[in-house]
Length: 68
Image 1: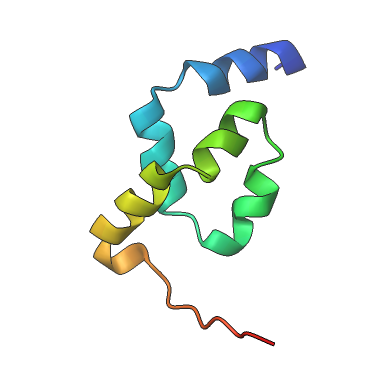
Image 2: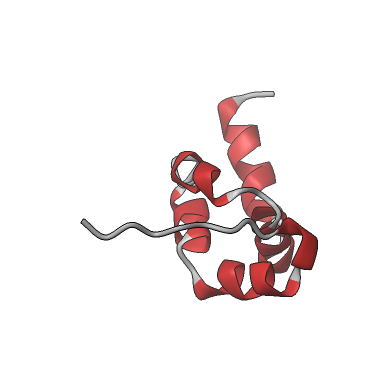
């Protein structure tokens, strides 16, 4: 598949589908996913993904924040 075709496939996914997929991906991969496209970058950083993650009980991972 050509690079241009790949971009069009990614951008044709409905926003809700992208949010639902990203909500199931561990957060440690979000920096990499944000490099896919500007659209993905905005979705990864949006409150929609985190709201959806909170609704998915088996897919959220626990994290510990350390303040130095």
